[in-house]
Image 1 (spheres, rainbow, N blue to C red):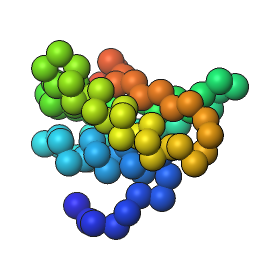
Image 2: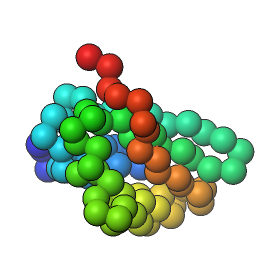
Image 3: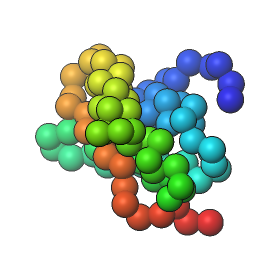
Image 4: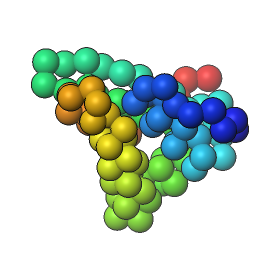
Length: 89
């Protein structure tokens, strides 16, 4: 994992998630633009979902906080969701 700084909120989210998982090849972060917000959907391997969500959702809440802070310049609301569908091989 390189130490290059992320350029946008998608890269920031992906950078954070890659540091948590055992299968980095299965990580996929997609961006969906709506009128109200930017929605980032995280897809990871099924065995890594628990690591990304954390006990009681603590880890995913922390990821949301960091991504929102990184998106302040954009002036748009950012939502981060962990997708239930498994990553495609």
